[in-house]
Amino acid sequence: MFIMSGMQIARLDTLLLASLMLLCTQPAAAQTALTVYGGYRGGGAFQQTASPNTAVELKSSGAASLSLDWVIDVNRQVQLFASRQASEMPASSSASGSASGTASPAVPLTMSYLHLGGTNFFEGGVGRGAYVVGGLGMTVMTPGLAGLSTEVRPSMNVGLGYQLPLAASLALRFEVRGYFTLINSNTNLFCSGGCVLSIKGDSLTQGEAMLGLAYTF
Image (cartoon, rainbow, N blue to C red; front, side):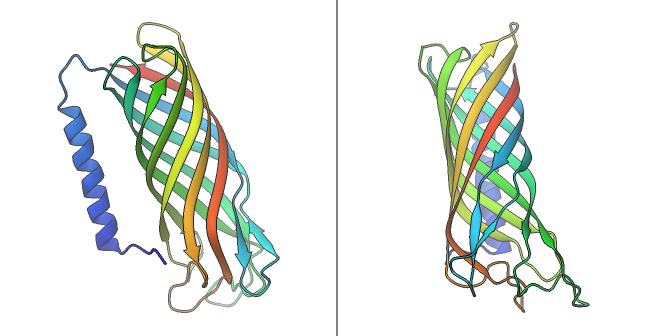
């Protein structure tokens, strides 16, 4: 089972920050694009430990994302991508909603992705037309309920997009992305001391439609 400690997470954050600083030291001729996305994300389910055939599905909801892209040649960019979704999942039959034992009908769950990857434009010339995008990194799953712990797992994303220039430095991005997270847990997830959610899973898959505004500088 892949579980990262606070120190390991800090080290990973340091590596990502170092990569960002290295990319920022590229020659001034290299263009940088900052894109802010709004999207709608769906999919994702766990299994109840007590009832293997019963799924605990995540609620579909809006998501906000941010990317930094650095041009490395005429067709490709390196991309640092971060995304956050405020979702929720039904409480399993064994859940206790608080320390007082009051049951909760749903458990808030924040899904955050941090990936390093890139884009490749099909038609030649970064910043215009269709492209493929992808990245590798981590998923941080943070339940908003006392007694539950944050889980960190390796993940990836892959997608297709189209960039439509609006002006010299502005463009619209239309994207669809898929996210795959390796859970690899046959025991209870989100356990900290006592387990309050009896769920498990091998992987988690989500899909998202996104609209972004890109600014190049």
